[in-house]
Picture 1: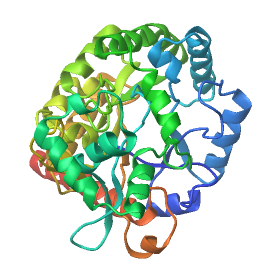
Picture 2: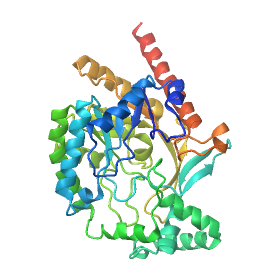
Picture 3: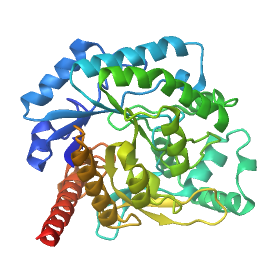
Picture 4: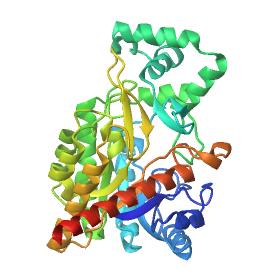
Amino acid sequence: MIQAWRWFGPNDPVSLSDVRQAGATGIVTALHHIPNGEIWEPGEINRRKEEIETAGLTWSVVESLAVHEQIKTNGPQRKTLVQHYKQSLINLGKAGIKTVCYNFMPVLDWTRTDLNFKVDDGSEALKFDAVAFASFDLFMLKRKDALVEYAPAAVKAAEEYFSRLTDSEKKRLRANITAGLPGANEHFSESDFLAALEVYRNVDEARLRENLYSFLAEVVPVAEQSGVRLAIHPDDPPRPILGLPRVVSTEADISRLLEVKNSPNNGFTLCSGSLGVRPDNDLVGLMQRKGHRVNFLHLRSTKRASIHGLPFESFYEADHLEGDVDMVGLVKQVMIEEGSRRKAGRQDFLIPMRPDHGHRMLDDLGKTVNPGYSAIGRLRGLAELRGLERGLLDGIAHQEL
């Protein structure tokens, strides 16, 4: 695997020098200063690329070239925004950046209720508490129609949870759920949040799928011509939330979108943390069956905690080799896929991988960090994954001898 690291640009508390010391060779980043929907011009792309290469690293993956909400909802500016997206892909391809991660999640990129959940060893993890989330939805946001979407037991649990919250805890819960992308330092106001949700009132699951597939039909041919491999990221969490549909949560979802354009340039990001939240997602089997279309890897593990009466599960981010993900089996299957690609003569036989998220620990506990993206927790994750890969390689070599 290509060992990579997500970096949020010059304002990231983790510097490129830090990344190089961690042992990563690839950088996963985006032009965060350019508003969603605007064209990534060649000058901006090349300036960022030169900055990364000057530090002795390679810009391996764009994460993310964001899809504007009007593309997802088929809004009045869709045609122009799709053209902007295609031009950005062309410009990235000319700059030699060949992998682009994106997502099609409505409104929110990923959702957590606790950004500082203490685990047994004293480090802090990201957590999604389904009861806390329901309490926000029902009693803070007071979203229209929310009450009918929860079972009576769920409403009761959420009401009891909400009654125990202090004002400061309510404020923190609201901020955690409505936070923007890591590194962006943006938050929705509740009125803006409700307005964003209202836009999706007439966009159900079928309509969102249609909008995604129409988008792919237009951009995949451009990606093919530009030599860019697209890698859609699965939903996080992989369930409908806030009345919003989700269409990239299961292997069946992934299979359908891959069939829309049967092309190696129309691939996906296998995020073991996002997909691993659902017990019905077989990650090792997914890699076996669809590994030839995996263009990017996010490796992390989650630990599920079932809450009765709710339409999704609670979970927290576990250590990379712990939790509910069979990381040994998954990495072994990744290596088998890379071997198959090498034999087939594919130039992309090495799949870029980054240790996704990480616990906040040691000196990082006293620092300002992007949630999930502190240095030391990801350093530990990268070291564990590197060791796992090396151990599997040594085992394969021993068997061959």
